[in-house]
Length: 174
Image (cartoon, rainbow, N blue to C red; front, side, top):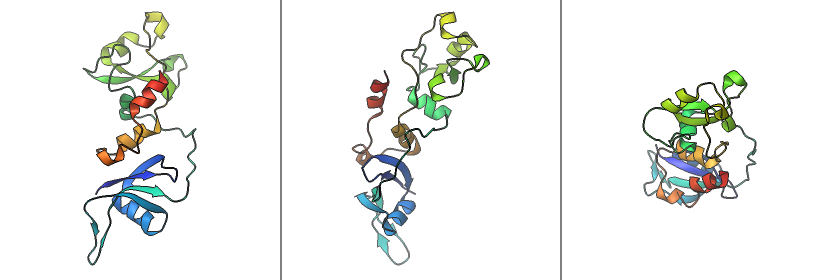
């Protein structure tokens, strides 16, 4: 099964879905094909254009305050698969609460970072100021494009023009 990039009516990337789901959206008149796959969809009697990128015909309002659950994979991807404290990508990565939960810190995007096991052990349940550790930048919720890039097994070359680069959002966060 192939994956299809779903764009809003404004060409804003929304999600990734299966080629069958995309075909149904097009067939029902809810979306149009922007890019098509080289190989068609086939049934017992017919063949259809296989969508690769579709655009919804009606604008879907996406709430900006939509809270995405924290997952280790999304957190590590947001932080570039490196420890935010020492910058190492080697070793076992862990999730660290900047303000420890034992001191009232919440499990929200703005309070969790990627840390290697030694840095997480060194920090423990202390505040950064207490052990002279610093963050290069304040953590924040990742850009929506990160979730699309994680949902796709592989981001095809033809999608790049519709997906803003992650670096664009990382520099904006700094």
